[in-house]
Length: 289
Image (cartoon, rainbow, N blue to C red; front, side, top):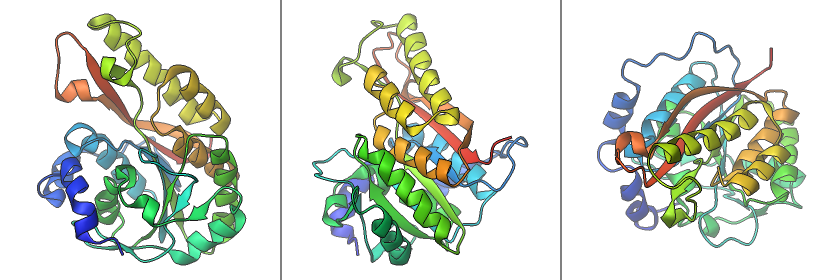
């Protein structure tokens, strides 16, 4: 069980206020694209503070929920804390402001049996990581009866094997499943060590092109391509989570991606000089054409 005294100090920084009211506001007037066809099996979601990326994440999950009814939601999370190996939260309950989520221990163990070379059970490793925490209230809102399998994924080649093993294990389970990956895109600015195009309009265009290249790979490329692109161009903060998702969905033949929405933190807090910004994309996945 994740107790409130362990999670809420970090959580308040990412989703302050009334979560249900904010989610209603994010999706007010939004209708999933008529071009989306079911069944959908996964999504990529940003994990910034809700004031920056919440709308993108909520609308993407609304699109996924319109075309799926999962019993289990597997969430591949980025890693921002010290972690020695990919970490599965194995059992218990995960507290959110909208009610607890049950952890699907059976599905987690099925993945662990297949992915033992790439994954270990480690609830303690999840304690201070926000990439999953920021999304769990949304999962509870859009999939209130679903259980979750939280997995933190490091940005290395083990993510590929983990993803493939997870896809195989989930394919053998007799239940509807969706997979999520938690990652933001380019972090632009001196504080992030990325100032390739200086500031102002050229910098904004450069950042958007950097994100667009990663979005194209996420929609139609492989997990290997995701890792290589992120390494070369610093346009994903959770490439391990993204690569694991892509490989799992490829095994499940649900790897065709479609962009739901794209935004940057600069859209919310404009800066005339464009000195810093973070990119956010929401993508859903289903069978190809």
